[in-house]
Image 1 (tube, rainbow, N blue to C red):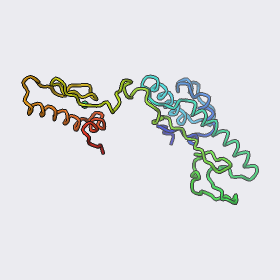
Image 2: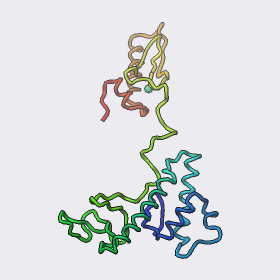
Image 3: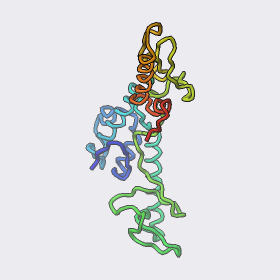
Image 4: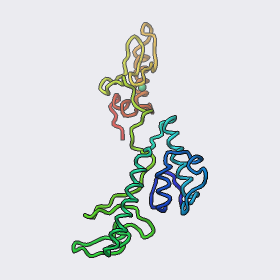
Length: 223
Ligand SMILES: [Zn+2]
């Protein structure tokens, strides 16, 4: 149930566990769990979470894994606890205990388990008074974050500058920055020359590296 892999969902924990996680979030599991846990906190629930956070935090430092960091998790827990408090308070005025599990129509009438509402077992969204639902879940790995590791070389040429040059018998690809083939201009017949020029074109057609740019040189659109 508490398998935290890539998403932190506060509804997977009880309020005691959330408060415990919030307090010990940045500690190693060994430190956080040293001396035991408070009543109502299940070690089997909080330990895998602490382990995963620590693991991602370390991987982000040495391997640039795009871990979102502790702050969004803290914010999610704070928001979840505040929302629970608000719901409990509103319950005294006859409102449902878990409003996100319902929807309301234009007249303000409540409909149980309407489209878009949370399933009964979990409170996954904060429900605002205007009906907007804001998920509590935090994706632990931000796959859309820009890579700090991979990317274009700073000196990358503009695509318009890409070409296969052939000077002095050297057929050269500016994309790969390498000689494709060469021949002796003093002795080569025009047939031999054309054969080498064709090898340059073949290179553009076959290259698996920067395919679109290579095909553009050969005037072949890439699907
Ligand atoms: Zn090339």
